[in-house]
Image 1 (cartoon, rainbow, N blue to C red):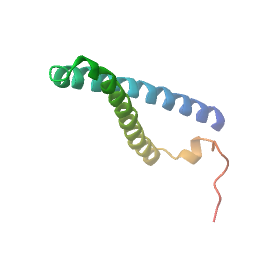
Image 2: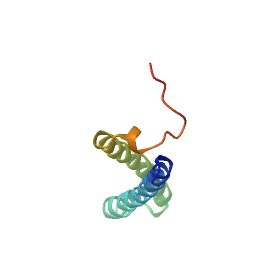
Image 3: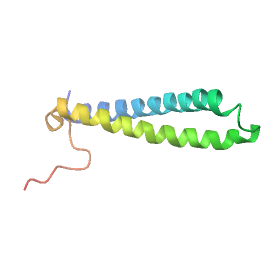
Image 4: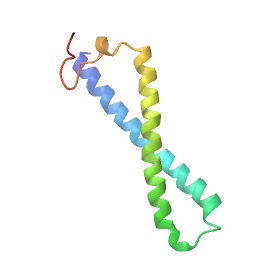
Length: 93
């Protein structure tokens, strides 16, 4: 496969991974934390803020997890050897 094909597959795989990670973290945050700890103590109209907080928290946590995994992959794999730059070539100094 060419570098451009590798880049396309990497970006698609990373996007799918990030979406799935966000969904799993959202489900864990909302259904485990909210349902187990907050629901008995809060009124019924607190579901909407809990959904917002869970969704925002899932996005932040999945982004942090994505960054750490990407840094790990970048240490193990020579990115310039296998992938084509998306936004142009790096400048050499």
